[in-house]
Image 1 (cartoon, rainbow, N blue to C red):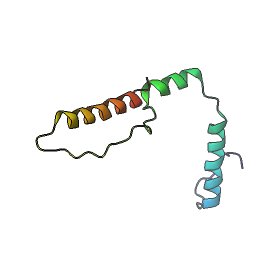
Image 2 (image 1 turned 45 degrees about the horizontal axis):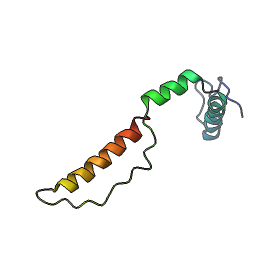
Image 3 (image 1 turned 180 degrees about the vertical axis):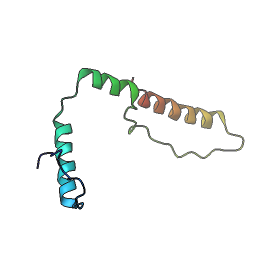
Image 4 (image 1 turned 90 degrees about the vertical axis):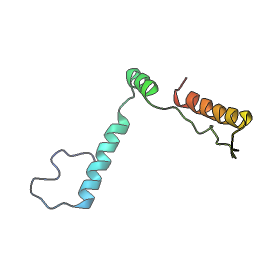
Length: 87
């Protein structure tokens, strides 16, 4: 059902099926909108990148930590930063 701006009518009982159809119609309209170059650029500039490839190592930190343990943690943080900044 396409979106109908007259629904729900003022002072009418709320019907879940009617509201679901309205939301589905709005979603269809949003999905049909083309993504502009400006919007793509803004999404790239202001949102995080995909960081799925950043894996967390199983770390056991000694007391005091060794240089290798600290370097391993620094490497993980560096990889996460690169993923999040969409470089």
